[in-house]
Image (cartoon, helix red, strand yellow):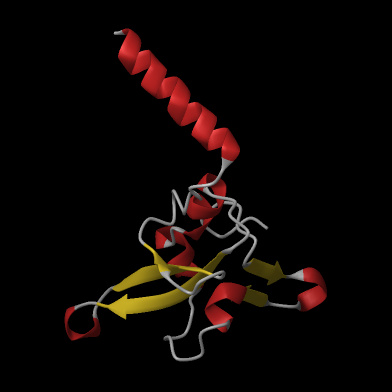
Length: 118
C-alpha cells in the first residue's frame, strides 16, 4: 500500500472507507516497547527502500524510534535480523550472501578471470 509519503510499503495500512479513519504501520505494532507510530514517520522511514533493494525471505525487520535532544525530533531506526541464526545484519540494503550460492560463485570466478586478463 502507498504510504503518506508516496512510497510502496507492505507494512503500511490505511482504511478511509465509509467514515473509517485507520492508518497504521504493522511493523511498528510488532514492537510494543517503541514509542507510538505517527503517519509523518513514513517520510523518514527506510523500510520501503530496504524492501525494494533486498527481497531476502530470512530477513526480519524491527522498528523503533529514537528521540532527539530533550525529546525534540524523531528518527526511525530499523534493525535487520537474520531469522536462520538470529544475528544482526549490518547492512539491510545488501543483506547476507551465502557462501555456497552457486550463481554468485560463478559470478565471482568470472570477475577474477576478468582481472587476470587485464
